[in-house]
Length: 144
Image (cartoon, rainbow, N blue to C red; front, side):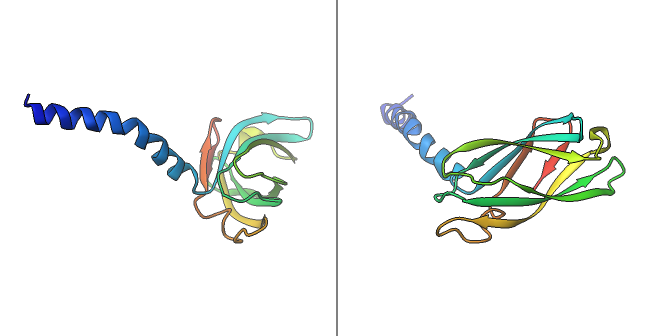
């Protein structure tokens, strides 16, 4: 290994840790993240638990999403607008919703179809859907 190569390698290794947080912040600062954390039967029907993170530069005073629930055959079981209320900038919140008359075992996947409310000072109305990241920790898929 030449001295010049070792120097270049050492410089790259030294600079990488400094660059990694900037890359992570750039990636994370692109929008909202919605995770379907749990799906569980409730007295009313089916309870959905979400973890919502706001990586937008602005706080949201009101945000709601239109969800489409699909059954195991891929057919639309129902549509529902869920009000996530406020989501402060840089914060993560847990939100739970009961879907009366819905059996959890009949829900195969969820689709976030739209964001009818995306309100905050200086927030573009499309900000909640553009750059939306979704994931699921349950057996039910979540797509945005």
